[in-house]
Amino acid sequence: MTKKILKGSWKTTAVGILTGIGILASQLVAVLDTNPETVFSFAQVMVGLAALGLGWFARDNKVSSENAGAK
Picture (cartoon, rainbow, N blue to C red):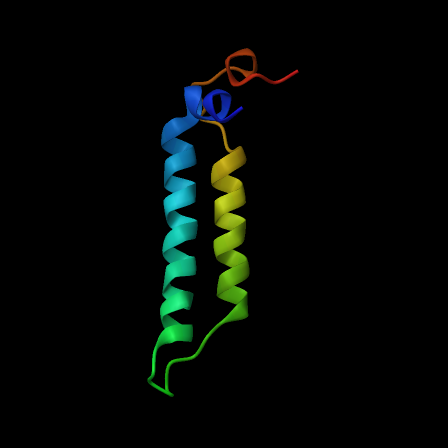
């Protein structure tokens, strides 16, 4: 299944996943930081998860439905 998703849309998928990981990592730093002025944002965690989902399911314009495995 992973191979089908990454077959034609690997650039879009990679950018979406890296964006989501970057957002989530910044919030992980906020949780683990000993500075009391650093604020954790649950909203940013939701944005990061949404970016991961969009990256995972996104498809490039150049990829046809048949190549993407759509039914």
